[in-house]
Length: 61
Image (cartoon, rainbow, N blue to C red; front, side, top):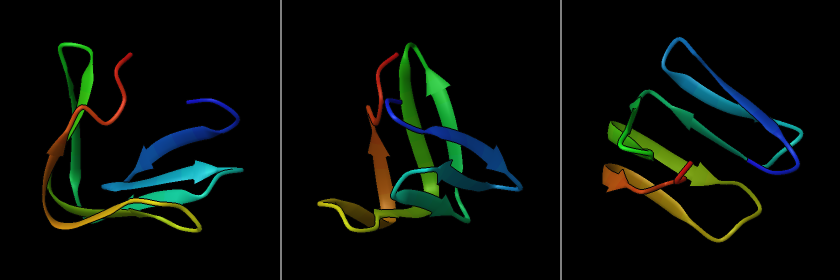
């Protein structure tokens, strides 16, 4: 991530000094990409969100 730090606490992602968070879901990193299952995420003051679904390739490292 650029210009911010994030961490996972009790199934909840928060990005400090940033604009998004994920609650009540699971994140996994596989083969250099982030995958989320069974959760919801959205970016506040931004352009994307996902609710009650599945997504992958969030951030390739």
